[in-house]
Length: 219
Image (cartoon, rainbow, N blue to C red; front, side):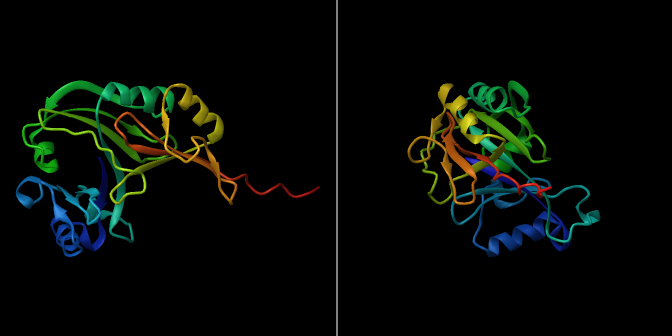
């Protein structure tokens, strides 16, 4: 499953205050004990999607006008080696890999996974400050999910590339499964080419290429 990581700020910069608000909206607390672990807490929204609220150390000083100053995504994976091969070697996200399983009491409590060990591969999407953190768990009961891309709670990481058609062909040649109807990229009405694929953990990601820009003025 994927976890959206939200950094609240503004009037709700306290994670406790923010938590009270999301509870009112119907969210369920996942973190062990039902209270934040330090300055972070994980909740599950009404659709079953997990959201991690993190109170940044400088949240009160932020000049942001809204209640969020940053975001990222944590994705639970079946095997970190397969994941790194796809997202770093084939797609090109520069991932820093910590291949050894280690205990982290605070993370275990935050995720409601007492006794678990973790190993990570994390990095920013090129050209952005949006971080993805792929995490493999060990020491807890795990089941490979089979949720469809259109079902409530499903996640989809969108990645913009220069040529979606060629990009998808290269991924298919490497054995990556296409979820889009017809097994190939689709051209939308706005000239955007897009395709949804799934990785070995049944997590969906979407490859998109932007519509061509306006033609230069005639001379």
